[in-house]
Length: 300
Image 1: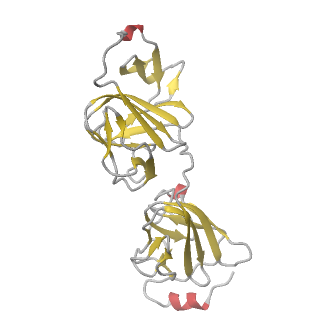
Image 2: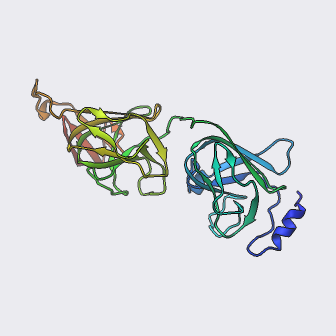
Image 3: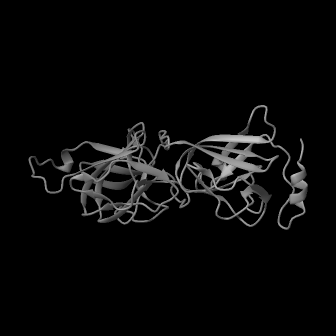
């Protein structure tokens, strides 16, 4: 494996270390990547055939930042491939400065200002990086067995460690039926992690009313700036389709009563604390739903 003459010059500079020899894979990590800052989900950049020192990756980038590491290193003091300036942007026009440095500090990162589908290529011999915009974000199904609500409107409010569970009805379809307060609302699949991706509306303040949701489409991003706004407290049914990235909302508020069904006559359903339906619950804490009533019960 070779090192370039440029690496020798860089090694002599303050704060800059010797460029790593060509590894088998590089890793992108940061808020713009699908794995966010989770090292276990760091995005792999694979070597480009017949181009020694080049690594490439194609996929979705959200608005946010990223840097590139030569190994899955849980130490944040490790050396990274970085832009040479703090304000190096990635957009439909490419990257504002292609120059790359391999250093421990300053903690500069590339900043994706336009979300979309990109090809990112880095050459660690010439120390350059390119970004090619391929089009709008490709929305692949969001893979998960659980989904939760969080926010002022959710029964659990902003409790990240104990968010309000939704019920999985079928692959990629999750439903919440129950009371919502007036206020902001988001959804997530990873309790306890504020840095994880949240399911959020495409614009902040997207209204949820008695008539439904203002815009059915949603995003999946580590940028949690957007929230749905539930305008009026009441009973709602929220249906999240994680394959189509859409939210359907219905409400019984304001509707006339055509039939009275007591909860005692309704079918009893049990769900575990992740919102997954359980047909034969044994020994544990469960959510019991009968009609419109939901309660926690301990089965021994």
